[in-house]
Image (cartoon, rainbow, N blue to C red; front, side):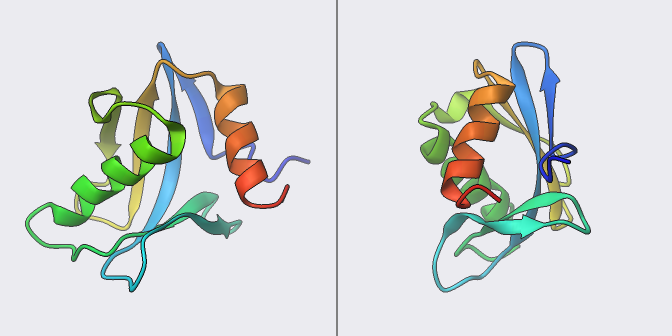
Length: 107
């Protein structure tokens, strides 16, 4: 069974990813791990969860990781919680899964 089965979903011309965010971290890291109980990819951001700063950093880090412009990344749920879902436009689900698995050493 694929551990990543429930974290991504095809959505229009892109893919959604379920994330678990740790704000106010010493270092920004994505992906920082896989939470199998929450079925979410972990991301650590340096910004505090105040004034939307952590959300903006999530979008920026995800865009950099997938080599997409920031305008192609949308926070579609979880604006005020650590559990967020982002939409990445113009990418395939296979590409997303492959990049995440390679970065997490094939979990």
